[in-house]
Structure formats: structure tokens, C-alpha cells
Amino acid sequence: MTETTNLLPGPAPRNGRSLAVAIGGNHYLLSVVSVLVFLAVWQIVSMNVPPVILPAPLDVFTAFVTLTASGELVRATVQTIWPFAVGLVVAFVVGTVLGLVLGIFRPAARILDPYIFVFWSIPNIAWLPLFIAWFGVGNLTLVVFVFVSAVFPQLLTVESGAKETDSFLVEVARSLGGTRREILHIVVLPSALPYIFAGLRIAVGRALVGIIVGQLLIVATGIGYMFQFYGETLSLAKYFAPLIVIAALAVLLNRGVNWAERMLVPWKQHAFA
Amino acid sequence: MPELEFVNLRKSYRSPRGDDLLALADFSLKLGGGRFVSVVGPSGCGKTTLLRMAAGLIIADSGQVRLDGAELTAPSPKMSMVFQAIGLMPWKTIEGNVALGIQLQVHRRALDAAEMERVHATIALVGLKGFEHYYPHQLSGGMQQRVGLARALVRQPEILLMDEPFGALDAQTRAVLQDELLSLWGRVNSTVLFITHDLDEAIYLSDTVVIMGRRPGRIKQVLDVKLPQPRYSYDARAEAEFARLRSIAWQSIKEEL
Image (cartoon, rainbow over all chains, first blue to last red):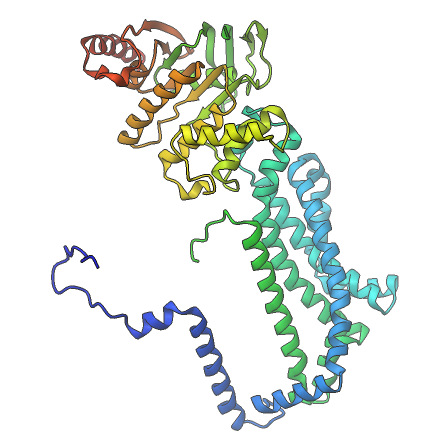
């Protein structure tokens, strides 16, 4: 045990850790406490308002179990996940590839950027009636709508990432004899990788909005339709079940993206880890 | 013997106001034979322009850079460059960054056993054995520049181009790396073209010091440093000859400031 040389005036700092430090140092515990406090507040509020305004946490839990046991919730989840996943994956691939191309070949960007900007500026929802006319009331429309919702944030984020490539590193690679292709592989792609993940994070959120809006307003299937149905019939305890599914899906996807980023971008330093 | 030759180099840049700024004019110099040549001069005298031309990164408006008699128009596998800002790939480990020196030289991603052996030997040579799997941001500035040196040396270059490689380091680290550079140079037989604005550094390291004048950049004076190598084997900076050269060089540069 070595003694710290204390050059500070006044009494030496206390050795024991304070409660705040103890809890603050344990992020997991902090999250658990936060959830418990939230549930307690919810319970107290729900006891003082009618159940059509806010159901109690326990009623929500019972409704969740019932809907799961009947298979309704699982069926709806599957109906939601399929078009969501297909639309998101295609948007990710197209957005990433096109974003890289536009970021690297500036003439291509000059041709396409105005169109992209116009499409990106139009509120997604405005497309929906047109997609129904083109693709009918069904999964194809949902897939296309999810795709359109997710592709632009992916594309624009990756494009700006590729543009941000450090020109000095490109020069270093060139001085070592790197060809265009080698420089793309060694400098441009790795430096765009954090942006690919940043884009994906936004794309996932927008795709989720897309699938719910599409199912709620138009196609009347899956989780989106459950919102509509239980909302209109004021069965609020049941309304919360699909809400929980969507929240879980969102958290899961976000964690997945974070995990993949940590695996693939090990060199990145986080200022606020 | 490898030989790098500058023949009547001329290069100008377009200034923001639209007129041409002559960075380098009628610059001719020949170096080689495994000698250590430094170019010093006030900032803005075209030193870096000269080195970038030597590396084949930019092309002169007129005149030629010749490497072993052939005109140089692109970076050559016979040369390596070390930069002041180092330029390590943040996403590659130390091993990966040094390996890059060979990969971009032979245009092959997979290195054979002998080449990997060379990568590891060079990392050990610059004193970084054990740090192969670290990322650049985990190393100090001095250690990062050792990696920069290893990436250059692993190519076994005929000509080593160095652009103020120690300019961003603290004084102690700089002194240590200067000695290590001399020791490495003694082992690899490369010709070195070293750019710096630090007179002491130039005299301490070099066989020949080229002093540049500015507007336009041109050779003003050439000084041969007759102090025996390796200079770290005795206190070269304390020699009377060192002080004499320093005084001459400083007079010469002062006129350009």
C-alpha cells in the first residue's frame, strides 16, 4: 500500500467512497433503481386516475401475458418484423453503397444531390397514398415505405462520412505507393465506418416509425394495427402490450448496433465512456 | 549507388488573390551515396514543396526530379517518407501500420512469412517490441513517430525523405529520437533527405546542410559538416566545429527572415 503524497492545504480527502459515488460508479444498479422509481410513480399516479386514462402497471402486465398466451401479440410481432427487416436491410445496403459512391466521386454527387435533398425534404407520410396506388395495400407497400424512411438518413450520413476522410491520411497512403483502390480500402472505408453506424442508428429509428405508421394508417396488420384497435376501443391495458414490444425491439436493435460498432470500430475513443 | 537529383525545379502556387506565388525556382541538387542531407530555411522557403516533389506527390511546373537517372512522376517503392504529423491509420494496430509500408509497396495485402518477420524486426528496431497490438492513440507522440519511422524503414528504402519528423515532439524526446535516427541510419545505408527549420538538428544529424533562401525558394549555401559520425558517440554539440557551423548558418538564415 503506497501513501499518496498530499500537497493540498487543509485536511486530507476522506478515504471512504460516498453513496453517490458508490451508486454512480455502478451503472447497472443505477438503471435498476431508475426503473423501480419509475414503476412506483406510475403505480401511484394510476391509483388516482381512471383506468381509461392510465392503467396500473400490474393490469398492463396481465394484459401482456394474456395477449402473448393467445398468440395475438406474437403473430402481430412477426407481421411487423418481416416488412420492417426487409425494408431496413435493403435501405442499409443501398444507403451505404450509394453514400460511399457519392462521397468519393464528387461529380456523381453533384448530379444526384439535388434529387436526394428534395426527396429527403418531403415528409415520408406524403408518399404513403402514392405507394398504395403503386404497390397495393399489403406488405410490398410497407417494405417500400420502411425503405424510403430509412434510406435517406443512411445515405446522407455515409456520404458526409466519406467526404470527411482525412486528406492527409490519403496523402500518406499515396506516398507509400497506394493505388486508388488500395486507398479506398485502407483509408476511406475505415474512416467512414463510424458514420455507417451513426447512419444505421438513425435509420433504425425511422424504419420503426415507418412500419408502425404504415400498419396503423393503411395496411391494418401487426403491431401498428394493435395500437389502432386497442386505442380506439379504449382498452388501454392491452394497448400497452404492443408498446412494450416496440420499446423492447428498439432497445434490442440499438444495443445490437452498439455491440457491432464496438466489435468493428475498436480504435474509436469515446470521450464519455 | 542510389541517387536523387533535382534539375532546375520550378513550382508556383496560385495565391487566393489570383496571382502566382513562386515557391521554388531553379532548384538543382544531387544527393545519394547513403549520405545524410538536411535542408534548412525559414518557414515559407519551399522546403516542404521540395520534399513533396521528391516524394512524387506533386509535380514541378518545370524541371525534373530524377531517381537513379529516371524521371520521377509518382511515388516510388524505392523511397519512404516520414511526416511531421506522422499519419498513422487510427484503425490499424502498430503491426498493421508498419505492415502497410510493405503492403503498399508490393501491392499485396497478404504478407509472406519473411515479410512479416521484417515487420516485427523493424518494430523491435525502433524499440517498440511488445506494442505490436496497440492502437496509435494508446501511444505517446514520440512512440507514434517511432512507428512512423518503422513504417518507412520496413520498406528498406534507398532514399528516406523526412519532413520535420521531430518538429512536434518535446525537446527530450526529440534528442532521443535524433540519436536513434543516426543509429538506425548507420545500419540501413539509406540516403536521407531531412527537412527541418532547426539549425542545431540539421548540423547534428547531417553530412551536408543545405541552407535555403526564400521568395523564391532556392539554394543559398551548402555546408559540409566534417564532424565524424556517429555523432552520439561523443558530445558533438560541444565541439568548436559545431559552434562555427552554427554561427555561419545562422548568419545566412538571418538574412532571409
